[in-house]
Image 1 (spheres, protein in one colour):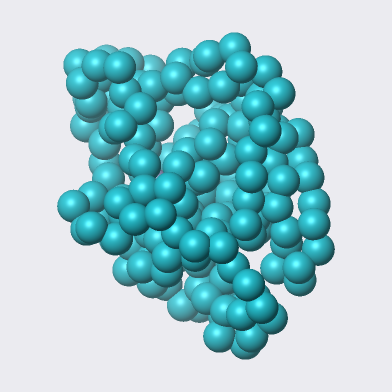
Image 2: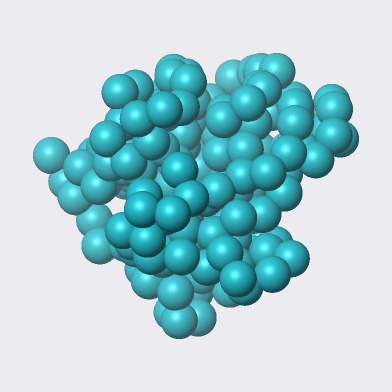
Length: 174
Ligand code: ZN
């Protein structure tokens, strides 16, 4: 298992726009980097991770939620490996979303996301796929795509009043 360091807010790399993945997708190094991102996401109890969070400025994110202790009340969804992802909004109804981020540890903040999206990407073998995502999966995909454009969850918050430590989130907001 290869667990990588996750960059924390303040690292300028988190504010860069990542570039599209080309033929390097099929190299052993790139495939190993994807495996290391999976290990890192699972080890840190993340429900998603984007390549820039491990210092790789390429358009790749992963997402998965299965009995995650950080989000026990949320619906499960399978592992998606999304390369050169695009998101099309299916239902632009805005829903409240309390989010955390591996790059902003032990903090939650409330923002709004679109209710339902279609995720279009290629998988690790280069095959295109698309998935209709709702609920938590839709929110995670929007959060991870933001990372590829240098956007963090705090940028999406209407008010800093809900910028909350995890412990206070559990005490006052759940
Ligand atoms: Zn994040």
